[in-house]
Image (tube, rainbow, N blue to C red; front, side, top):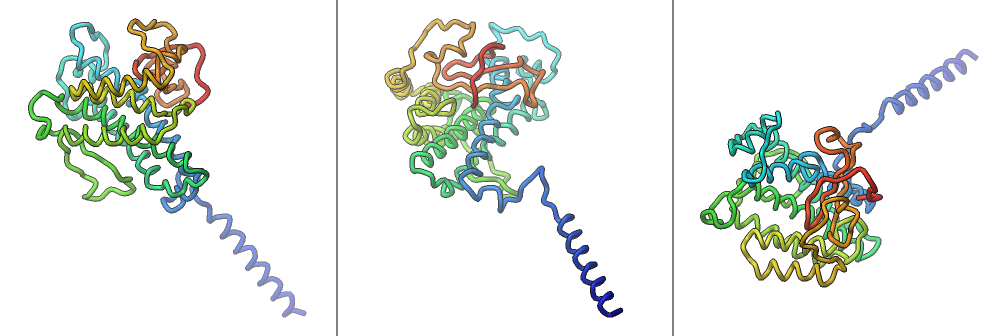
Length: 309
């Protein structure tokens, strides 16, 4: 009798200990292990959305890339009277390595690049259709190219200012960074090497992307960006050819005098728009609702918004 009671007590204690162990063995909700992050097509698509989110961050296309380009490149038509010391330094051409806007944009751009590289590393998981796989690859290449392009424009000399073959550009990152080692401290590639990589990514993206892709990057967005890249490189024939592909194939029209009011609503004038939501972490620094438009970059407005990225 006592033996039976003792055995039952031991079994009950074992069950309780097992139950407690299972309840305490809970995975973190705020992060996910590398081995479980990109196991399915759904995981890859979610990561691609994260790459778009990286594009629209406050330090990226959410505002600072355009602001820094304007302040650095246009002292004739712009007078900066704000109180941000970092922006004032940019306006006066006194940028130093610890400028918070410079470091923020650098980190945000490479963050988006890393997300795109993670997508590209897991393309074999996209199995629903060949067309979907091509679109995902093209979108990731577009994002990676766009950020390398903005980085080399901001942190290196322009093509034509010295020798692009030897002028230092920015590091080219083509693989995911999942842990920091000495190999991740990449040297700056030459300006020409960075532009060559951008052109290669955009050219491939244009061939992979569909003509219509909702609010996501399509082949015309890739061609429009490619036109800008060629223009920066003074390759005027290639720039015109890429622009003509957009004008002739996208159904969009060229307006040499675009209306600045509600331009984001007039889709016939742009190939891609990225809505920047007021609910994001950048709220308060720039206007509540912004749009990044190709080929125009504007900050507008409080009215009708796209349904998704």
